[in-house]
Length: 110
Length: 120
Image 1 (tube, one colour):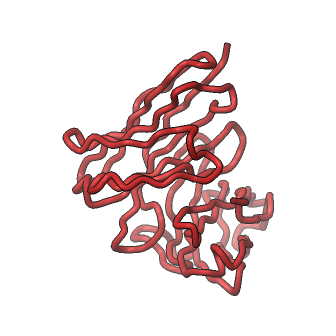
Image 2 (cartoon, helix red, strand yellow; image 1 turned 90 degrees about the vertical axis):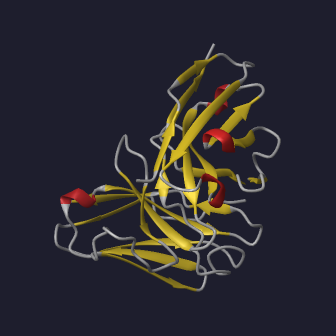
C-alpha cells in the first residue's frame, strides 16, 4: 500500500498561515472521514494534533485546523510560531482495514 | 493517566531473534487496540499492524505480513512486537500506539519508542 503524498517541506514567516496537503486515493482519504495528523519534534514521539479530519484533541491549540476535499486532506497552521517547527504526518484508515501514513512534511518558521 | 512504556534500546546481529514490549497502564488494556509504527532512520512513519487484546484479533500491513508477529499478554497489560530473524533493514525506531475503537480511527497515545539496531 502506497504512502499518502505530502510535500517534503513547507515554510512561512512567524504569524503567517501555512497549509500542508495530504493526497491519497478513493480507498483511503477519499473513502472515510478518518484522517488524522501528527506532529513530531526531533527526537520525540509523534503527538496527535487532528483526528477525524477536523477535530482537535483537548490541549491542542486552535491555531491548528484540518479539512478534506475528495482524496486530499489539509492541515492549516494559523499564526505560525517557532514552536510549530516540526515534522507533520497525515494518516488515514483504509478500505483494507489498515492504516497508512503520509511521507511527512518538515515545517520551518523563517 | 494513560501511559505506554516501551522496553529499552536493542542492538542485535542479523539473523538473531528479538521481542520488544509495550506496557500499558491507566486504562482497560483489553478494551483498546495497540498498534505498532515503524520509523526508519531519517524516514517517515509506517503502520505495521495492530492487535485487539480483548480477543487477540490481529492485522498486519500487507508489506510486512509474515515478517513480524504482534501479540499481547493481558495478565500484565503488555503488547509485543517480535522478529524471528532480524535483517539490517529492520534498524528503526518502533512506537506502540493506542487506538480506541469506539471513538474513531486515530492513535491517541504513543509510547516513547524503542530503537532497534541490527548490525554485524
